[in-house]
Image 1 (cartoon, protein in one colour):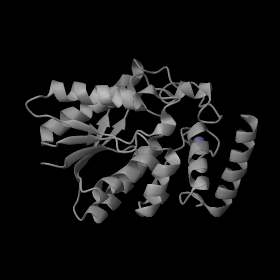
Image 2 (cartoon, rainbow, N blue to C red):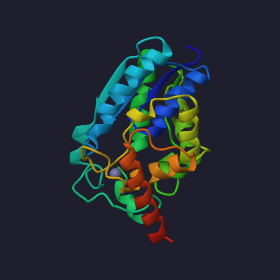
Image 3 (tube, rainbow, N blue to C red):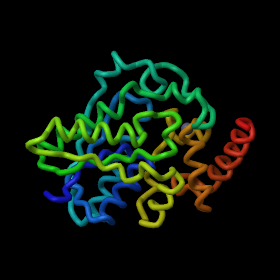
Image 4 (cartoon, rainbow, N blue to C red):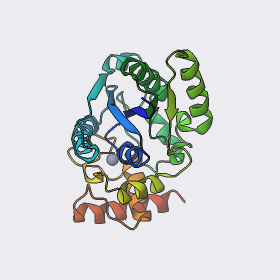
Length: 244
Ligand SMILES: [Zn+2]
């Protein structure tokens, strides 16, 4: 009970690194939640399933994985590029255009449900992988939001308190990646692209951000073939030159 945790895992780089980090910090992950809010990158959910399986081997126990179906929200939250019909912007991740990828109030919705689940299964914490590289686009990854949400969730469940864990809130995506690499998390299984093709597009905001994170760590992206990595680096150079 004391360190029991429900973890929100998308199938991406950040939440996968977080799972391995939580174990290394002595947290007991008793359930993993993946939210399906009708996003285009269904590939992320398939990735999450593989990652959870790997995590079971690492943690030495099989960890229940629930896919939370929020697809019905699509009808009322379908403004963003991740759920609606808008184009996914092919620009650097910190550009204003990336705001099209905001699902309105996403983290507050996900965290509320995850906290409800934590109360149900008797977990003490809910963990999610917000990090500081997301601040410029996603306000619900900022420490101010995390602190306020933590307090609200705690007060809402005072007899069975749950706290939020956001262990990466003060570090960058490159630092998160470095933790994942160091802990041998299965980053080759992760999926980040927002476009929804059979292979990563290599030039949407998340693909570019991911390339930057591996580049800063001096490591090729293990989810890409050597040829794709060369192409990813060249697209990254191109887009970062464009944004100067
Ligand atoms: Zn992409």
